[in-house]
Image 1: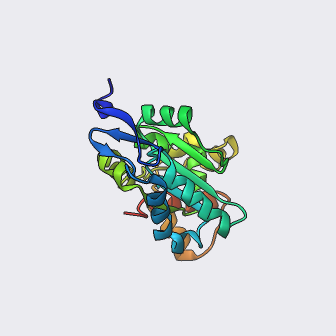
Image 2 (image 1 turned 180 degrees about the vertical axis):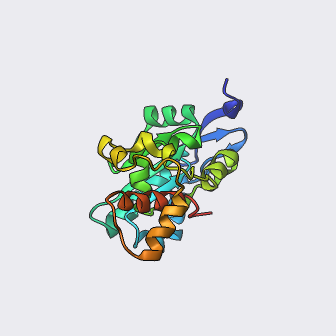
Image 3 (image 1 turned 90 degrees about the vertical axis):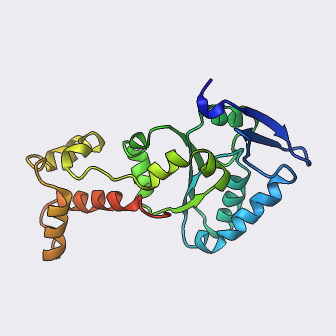
Length: 216
């Protein structure tokens, strides 16, 4: 069995809702998970009003995610919520027992931080500077993984991003592999002028490099 699930069970709360208990950590209140989730959402209402993209660290059994989504509906016509969860068994059980009806919520299951930053769709999401929310019980269980995500340092050379680029974009970066982001970004900022088409992409990738420090 996966070490992260050496002690794993699904218990029933006092009001009949499923509560995962993993390695003696209750991922939700054993009394009233929904009330707890409402408090979680209320704590973040101020930030949710100004952000239509939300990144939640930790799935649990989704109660807090659903309350965040309900709040987002009241503030925005269009919104997107990504939930990062490294525990594959928990994700599979959640989808089997419950799942999300809201199609604006997407679960990303991975145990490798590097893989997250290798997904173009995830980078597109980060470019919108999402509000980052931490589900505390999940963070306690997966502290090493989530800390690694929040402190991730993106590679500094263009060549590391080739796999994310379209063929057209790759052409724009010909002969640029030996130069660092810092060098080109500073050139663009100092002249305050975008000379080449690839300068747009340079600034975009620089934004990706810095976005992961939010929410620490």
